[in-house]
Image 1 (cartoon, helix red, strand yellow):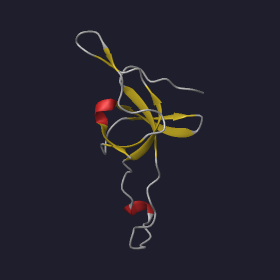
Image 2 (tube, rainbow, N blue to C red; image 1 turned 120 degrees about the vertical axis):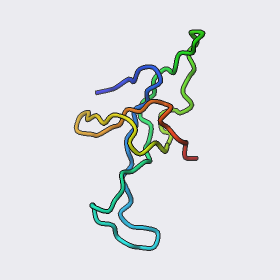
Image 3 (cartoon, rainbow, N blue to C red; image 1 turned 60 degrees about the horizontal axis):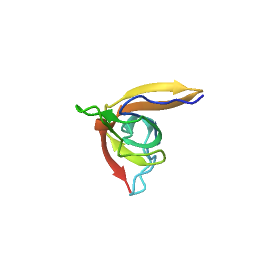
Image 4 (tube, rainbow, N blue to C red; image 1 turned 60 degrees about the vertical axis):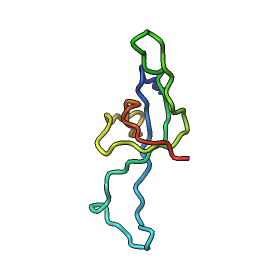
Length: 95
């Protein structure tokens, strides 16, 4: 199944939280924070300005991004979990 987000919405697949810290400490499931890093899997056409022009999104499929901790709506498609975000919920692209 394919999904096409509308307007300035973006579908992302959340990347798994790391189980080991840089210092080598293994984190149990209860200590892991909600991950805030994701990979873009689908992008809408963009936001419509007051003048009626479509402003394309700054991200594209395949980009890795950082997003706000409690942003977006969780969905499940074909057994995989995704998050639908508005472009304004994206904090940064990871280069």
